[in-house]
Image 1 (cartoon, rainbow, N blue to C red):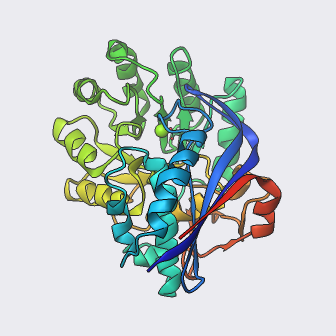
Image 2 (image 1 turned 120 degrees about the horizontal axis):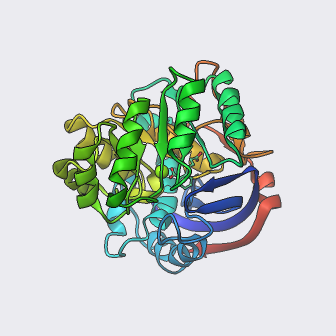
Length: 370
Ligand code: OSB
Ligand code: MG
C-alpha cells in the first residue's frame, strides 16, 4: 500500500454537556481528523484524541497537529507499507507523541480494511458480535444532579456506571450513589488526583463494592500504585500510566493494577493496543476500552478494538447522542437497550463519514502529498 495523500483537518465541536474531571472542564472539543488516500483512491479515516490542553497527557491539539504535519504525514507519503500492522514501526524513531501517531496509524488500518472489503474489527482479529457499553459521568454540581444522571443512563440500558472523583468529592459521592443503587456495576476514576498518603481514604472505598478504582495516583508512579493495591481490596485499573505493552507488562509484574483501560491514542494505535490486550489476556488481566470524548471516527475505532477477546469488561464507549447534537458519522453510534453496541458489518470502520458535516465544523486543514 502507498498513501499518496494525507489530509489533516481540525474541527470544533461543542459538547452537549460539559465534561468535568479532577483535571478540568471541557465544553468544546477541538479534534484533528486524518484522512489517508492511497494510489488507488481508497481512503481511510483516523481521529486524534489529544485534549485541548496538556493535562491528561503531555500531548494536546497543537502538539499533535505539529507532529502530524511536520513528521508523520511526510514520512507516510514517502514510505509504502505492506500491512497497517507495520505502520507503527515506521514511526518508532519519533519519540512519544502516541496520540498523533495513533490518529494516522488507525487511518491506515481503516484503509487496509476497506481495501480488503472487510470490517476493521475482523481485520484486527475481533471475535465479539456485540460489545458491552458503560458510561463515564463527569463531576456534577450536586449529588442530586449526579443521581439523576445515573438514573437516566441506567434506564437507557448502560451496563456499568463510572463516576469521576477528586479529593473532598469522593466518599460522600460514592456513598450516596451506592445507597440509591445498591446493585449496579459501579466504579470511580480519579485521574491521578490522590497521593499514597491518601491510602486510608481510598481503603474506605472498599466498603462500596466498586468494580475498580481507575488511576488513583500519579501517572508516573507505578511503585505507589503497587503499594496502594496491597492496602486496598478494590482492584486498581490503570489508565494514564499505561502507554505501551511494556508498561502493561511491568505494571502487572509489579502488582500495580488488576485491570487495564486501553485507549488507542494513549498507546499509539491499533498495533500497540493489540499488544497490550495480548499481554493482559496472557496474564488474566481484564481490559476495557476507555474513551476520550471522541467524535464518531474515534468512537468507531474504539468499537472495532473492543471486539478483541480480552475486552471482557464494559467500556467507556457509548452513544454519539450523549456527546453531540450531530455526529460526523452516519449512522451515529447507538446502544441497544441491553447496553451493547453491535459492530457494523460494512468495510473499514463501517460508518459513513459525513464529509459535509465535517466541512461545516472545520477550523483548519492541510494536505500533505508525496
Ligand atoms: O480518564 O477516562 C478518562 C475523558 C477525557 C479524558 C480522560 C478520561 C475521559 C473520560 C470520558 O472518562 C470517557 C468518554 O466518555 O469518552
Ligand atoms: Mg480514566
